[in-house]
Image (cartoon, rainbow, N blue to C red; front, side):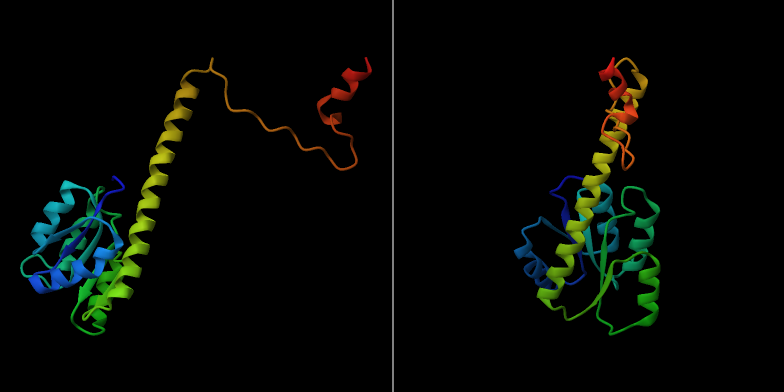
Length: 180
């Protein structure tokens, strides 16, 4: 996923979308919007989504159903999700959401500063994770290439540790070579 991945905001009310976009605009990330769970899934499958801010109660395909579907697909299973709800402390919703791997459950009305802080942290952490995965793939490919071509010089080997009390070079035989 490119570093310019969008934050996808999903809510069925235009005023909610507008308020959330205004709350997140200072972060400077690209923002996307969807008004239904089905539309959100389509955008997720197209890619370039780095975080999902999702209303739990949507007509048709609800928020938890969207998350269930996302977690089954390799390309979307690690995208962080923040679930919005208008119901204060719904224990069943919270238990189901966290069991699906939702990063946080936020109740409306939303504190814009707190939401920005959470979103910034989750988005940045996810982007760092993706960068590390890319680096690991690159390093593995380089290692496989070196293994497949043994004529190429390998990685340098560290020198063995010198036991305490021995002069430097004693463990490698350098002192004996110097005496001859």
